[in-house]
Structures are given as structure tokens and as C-alpha cells.
Amino acid sequence: MDVTNRFVLDFARGFERRHGAAAMLDFGCGAGALVQAARAAGLDMVGADVFYGGSEDRVRAVQTGLLGSAIFEARDGCLPFPGGSFDLVTDNQVLEHVADLDATLGELHRVLRPGGTLLSLFPARDVLREGHIGIPLAHRFRQDSRARFLYTWALRSLGLGTWKEQAPTRRQWAVDKLRWIDTYTFYRSRREIFRAFEVYFRSEPREADYIRYRLRDVAWRAPLARLLDLPFASAAASAVFRKLAFLVVVSRKAPR
Image (cartoon, rainbow, N blue to C red; front, side):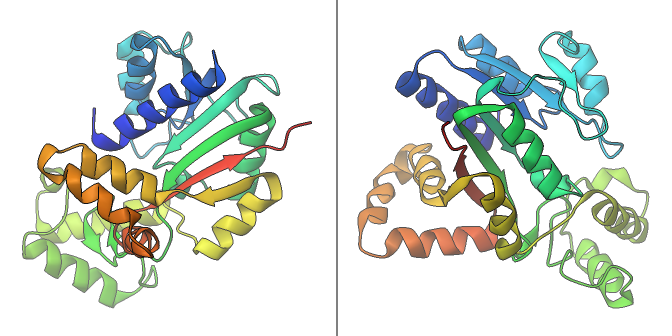
């Protein structure tokens, strides 16, 4: 399990320690790695995903044997759960893939109980590195831009990029990967994102918590976590992190 999923898992464990037994949902669970780890840790977590065409997660979810019992398929923008089903909902690198953020947040609000919590990790438009294909700023060009294609092809030719084995040539890789991000990603400004969240939740940025977690995850880096306690250090580190990686947002549904 990668460090980001471990962060989400430990957040869920901490949530249960603070609030008692809790029903949890991992929205956009993919093949269910977090769901399996959470259930192995004794947490009451299920997952849901739309299983979009840009991945093979549905096939892998079937292979786990959990599809239909602990992993469920969302259809037509609706989650297959009654309103107020969950105390905690998590989504990790998911919301940049939804076309209608307002409708998605409305559905997450619906399935949360009053006072429930939503943990979201995902990039905004101002992130410098397009993390899905590994090319800096590839998502910042106009989609039909010839300059974007030449730029992406050039950087791939210099060795940058991810999933390199998925195309026979560097040129074809650039064509395929740009088509993928155009089809399956929807980057928004932070202002747009928080405006959408504010309709349903009270939200706060928590990138500093994630930075501390990453630092403490490696023994030799752990002492550096104390630097975030210095005046303005947390805010500065969070601002840089948002540019290099993603937002970390904790949102709460109003109690009755």
C-alpha cells in the first residue's frame, strides 16, 4: 500500500478512536486496496466506484471477490446506499476525475450522517506536475494545442513520463496520454473547488497533516516534522505542497 493510502487508513483509524465504531465509505475505491486493508484492520469500510473506462479497476475488483459484497458500483451518478449511511467518507485522487463536482459532492453529502466527515485528497489546476502521466504542466495547455503535443512528446523523449510501456513509440505515448487526461480529468481552480465544497460542507485545508505524516514515515526525516511548528512554516510548506502534489481537505456535514 502506498503512503497516501496509508495516510487515509490511519486517518480512518484515528477517526474511529475518537468517535467510536463508525461506518465508512471509500468513494472511488478502484480495485479496493484501501477497503481490504481497512477491513483487515477491523474497520467497517466498504467501497464504491463508477469504474470508468480509463482503468481496469473493475476487473481487479472482481478478482478480489469483494465486488457486490464490500465493493459496489455507482451508476448514473448515484451511490447504492440510503441517505445518512456513513460517518466517514474518504476519496483519494478521485475528485479530479468527476465531470460534475457539485453533483458528486451533493451525493457524498447525502450518504453522510449529520456531523459526518469527508476526507478528500486530489490536485487542483495550479499543480505543476500532471501526476497521471508525469509531465509537468501538461494539463495547463489548451487541449487542442499543437504546442502541448510537441512539448509532451519532447519531454517524453527526454525520459519523463509514466506508464512508458503502454505505447510503441514516444510520439504515440504523447498522443495516447494527452487523450487520456483530456477524457478522464477535470482540473479546477482552488477557488472553484472550495466554492463547490462550501455549498454542502464546512471545510478546512489539511496539507500540513499529510506533510507531517510523510516526514514521519521515514526515520531519518522524522525530526524535520518539528520544523512545521515554526511560525509560518506550516502555511509555507502547505502552499508549496499544493503546487507540487495535491490538496488535502477535511470537510464536515452540519449536525442536525
